[in-house]
Image 1 (cartoon, rainbow, N blue to C red):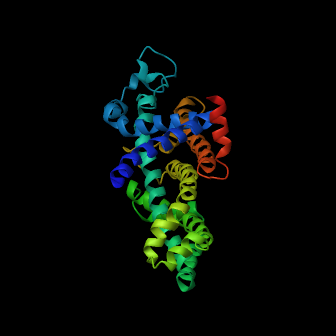
Image 2 (cartoon, rainbow, N blue to C red; image 1 turned 90 degrees about the horizontal axis):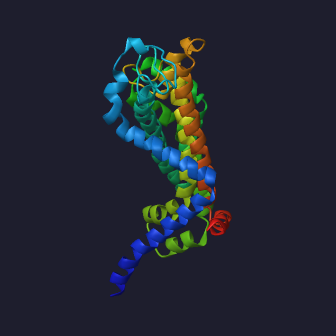
Image 3 (cartoon, helix red, strand yellow; image 1 turned 120 degrees about the vertical axis):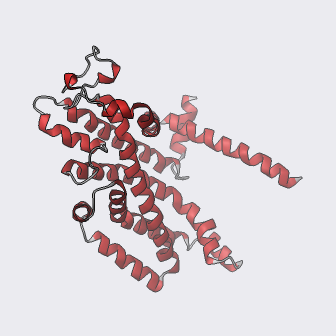
Length: 308
């Protein structure tokens, strides 16, 4: 009977926790608007190519470098047309998928690898930590953008290679953060109690240490997502990122730079999409840093009660 009651109350507790976080998000209006914008970008990345890929690739030389905010060619030309007459709005929506895929793939890969190595280095100590930290020092000794440029000149520029290179360059961030957090958490009483009760090292790390470290990693990942997206845009701008006919926001900026004096909107709108997305990620990261910290969460909870 008690087991059934416990199972029934778990969804209610999760729903209550979700409402609590939504109220805290509503208390920070900038973070709320940033979350809405990021949801819009995610929807564009998921459904944009299915709906607009044909329109984004269709050339119309009569609309070559068409000015923005002219409605005679339809709503899709509200942001203007590119050098081949393709609607910029449709291309920005379609390009969101590759831009988000590269950034998300690189962040997920670097976070998984880096946090795993950090957990080992922080909990095991001794020579494990030395070997892993020297590996991080080797990666950090190369400037990340320079390393990406060098590797992508050797390898074929593709989505997979771009994700791989960017993920490798970001591993030390998560490794060092995780190791520092684990070395502090492993000294706490609940970890020592689990050790005394005979719990295995794997169970202690996964069940007791990782949940404490995870909020910090998620906050770092949100900030790192913006950095990786800017790095991908820079590589595409240099011509060694995603190659046509694939498209990203950075590649659109690169293609529009030669028309800056005659058709500024070709580079402006995809550049604005990059700026707004990175700004939204930074605002949401600041909110997460407070919302996931029990000692600072009261600021948002007071704000949500006053707004309510």
